Image 1 (spheres, rainbow, N blue to C red):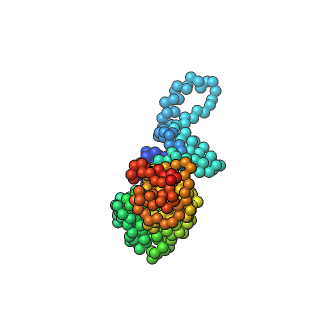
Image 2 (cartoon, rainbow, N blue to C red; image 1 turned 45 degrees about the vertical axis):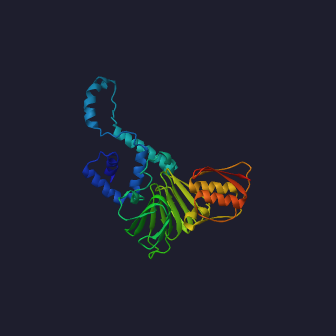
Image 3 (cartoon, rainbow, N blue to C red; image 1 turned 60 degrees about the horizontal axis):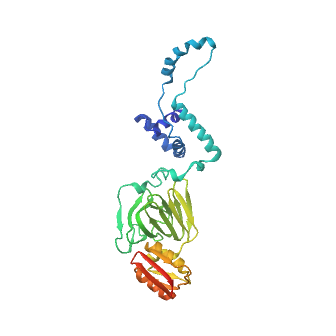
Length: 339
């Protein structure tokens, strides 16, 4: 259908007619991969304006002006409109893509929000509320999804249980952190997806956490394997003990993470002769406070410390390690040093 490739530029530039739109949509359903490729290529050349150019009328207007030069020899003159230049540009990109691969053109830092995913990959996140809202205001909430899977919500988390649709189960994590235990559901073969604003997680049976922040998603796998997707071509697999941080379409895979990041669910921090510097770094992230460890300070806390307010926790850890704690500003800034 050669006509399709003539209409596609108009379609992408929102200049196609209703009849042409129907033609493209029908072709798109039959050729989703090819449509996706052309759309990606179009975005690489979208700064070249597309204008419907009447070459015949232009030639009729130009020909009289050229009559004075006709005696100098016969030559064929071709008028090339911007639409044709657009096709030439796209053709050039197609050649380069064929040689170097489409990945070379995917600079994720300049992709706008909403373009992170292939058609339909993460559209579930932007749909209106249709499921059950799960909220955790000031306490950790332990509950179950409609399919029987277990879910724990950290304080401040906002989740939507969207339920099953077209054979797949979907959950949104709009804000905060949620722990999933999806080994309990009846249909273990059904696809299960967790969506945030910039990532999607596909799982079969496992335990993992999803943290959704303003411009960042963090996935930590406790058991099993998950596939993390930041775009239709940018995806990785994570196994137990690994984590991934997704930001601006990029995925940063980290081989390990501290189990203490799950203290909000387990109810305790566990340290085994851990450097006070590492402890301070963990607690800074967990409580979102500033903890300064004075240079030369030594200490390796060991033991299990129940989750409590940061003042009391730091006091307990300091006493157990023979260190001195100074509260510079309660719930905001602390200093730890040798006695």
